[in-house]
Length: 628
Image 1: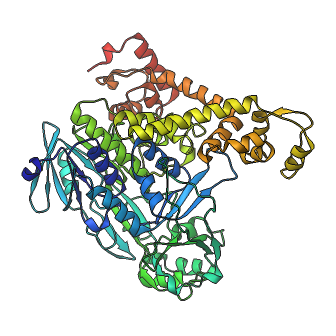
Image 2 (image 1 turned 180 degrees about the horizontal axis):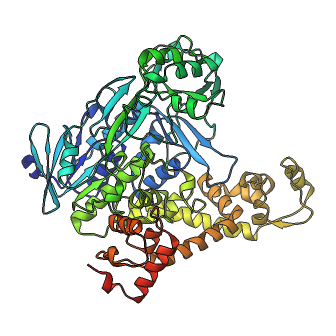
Image 3 (image 1 turned 90 degrees about the vertical axis):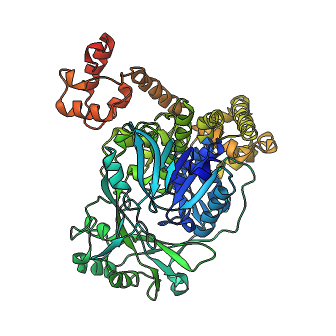
């Protein structure tokens, strides 16, 4: 067999959230995968926050599930708490968040990997990639063992030349207690691929037995559970609360007095940190007028006393961390199990890849996750899934899967990465999408399940369930359009509880458009609606479609208008230096990124509307004179 000769169809380097999705996607599609990881005990580890989901990120998880990935399934199987955030706000910003059992999550994912006969798991460090004529042919590990392959997916997380900082002390590591991946960056450089530095960090863990929870505000999960996966029969588990405390004036004084011991403020760390998840010292300095910051106390799992201090990331010395943590209400006697730390690591700016996440320079080389300059488990998993699918497509000579911005947050994420010069770890936000009302967490299956089924990652049973759900949604919308609610005394008695009143009969769909009216209220006032017993995931989507019908149609028009620029295809061999009337900076950016369409070109940072107009004229008249 080929694996006895160290020959595999695909090699996935790294078994974090991106690597697991990539390996499982390839394996489910029938190819042999070598999954290399620095430590097999840390598969799908949550080295920072033991949680999945949240604003924008929950939509990514639902999209992963709709395409046939596993993050949603694993999260649903191992949660400690489920909570819908922004439930009182509009559907574009509602977000499901799960507190995970960290160890159980990792075990569940490892079982998925080890139970797949197409995946060969190995603990080793890949130090070199082999390419012939700019085509991947193999990889070499730290022991000098060579593996033959036609495709490699790099998902190295923070391990690539990683260096950990605790105060002014530093050492080589990608995560606390795990070695760094040394040598692979040099190999990438030899292949003509550029790397840069980024920085991230994680808070300390404390022993929950030393916490006084009575001084904190309890943060329970939802009683009515929601789930990430569209699969049926999700497990109902006992849930556990989180807690809220706050920084104090003493906390801030301790931090200010010790800034000279921060590696960031002493210039020892050169990588840029995450803008939307700053360290506590950054918060104190940047928001000096704020007297207090929220700190959430979150369980790491049922099998451990370790507790996560969310919002308290720092790289200050370990002894200073003790003073800082013990200045927080409820943590006066806290015992630190693991100190907080910062980690600086190499990443590969994704402008060097196509929308398929394959290198523009080396055929068969794909990148996914933090190596592309992102932060977050969800962003990593989404990229890993796309990279894995496209590694399979590359092997088979199939068309690459390149999701559009209008189809998904995953498409938006990848488009931003490959067309913009990312300067800090990229985090998915609802504000990054111009189509966020269309790209909701509730309709991810409607947008992507057909694609997942066509690829082969969604089986026929799941696809049949999906089509039945879509039919239920359509039928219920039509029923509500035709159903009349009479202005009876009984109806108005119920509506009065919600600040509403009917002077005359009204169609149910029109009533549902009122801000105070929900589908659950319709069930209260209409016996037929109650007796139909429509599933929650169906009526929630119906409610959104009815309430926001006008806004949704307006955004669909935006998509149609944007699609006009997508139709202007730019030939691969255009020599932008020959094009007159556009700036040298624009020419340089277009030459580097090589957009496929005018729409992609328009989203490149620094490319002006006037430049797009010139390119449009060029393409209209014929681009032959500008070809290389």
